Image (cartoon, rainbow, N blue to C red; front, top):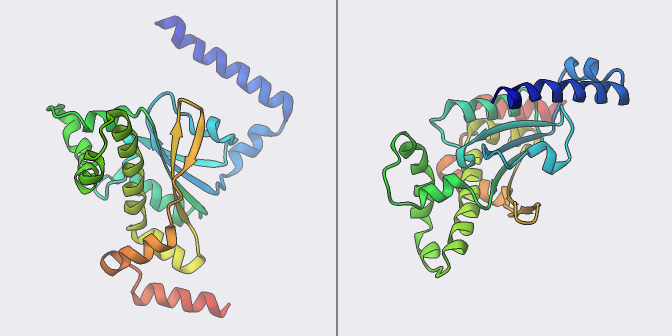
Length: 226
């Protein structure tokens, strides 16, 4: 156990040496600031490394991960990350990425008491309830499982779009745009679910429009005058 733990520091030392060898100012530049264009919201699964599968370098990707890539309005962790990424980092894209073989989604399909996980998994079970007719039409359990992974991503994208900070920033600057992806560990490929952000925003705003305020409209008016 200690040997595997100590190996982390040895790996870190080698990583530092390799970065400095390629660019002597690497850590000076890295410590200066961060200006990522992307916020990635993914699953905590140890097999899914956002930066590695996307080919991104340190500083290019702002990351939040939890079980089954859930965005819940009552979860201060995910909402704080989104607020900070949109309002302060000015990210241009928000990506919600699930993955086939997700243990959280599988657990949500299992009719059993999972203790403290129950409230969290209820978010995914609610997705199943919303799309039960489509999901129950699958005879193949694996296909049903994969489809729930996709639908969960879709619903979490909608939850992101519901947020006031996302709607307001998009009204002012036409970004961020929300995307839904699934990572297929069986092939290593990223699948774009092609979420129609503008249509989704328009569809939900009858109920979830949080931009109709004097403050937002004043900011938009002033911005257009510059």
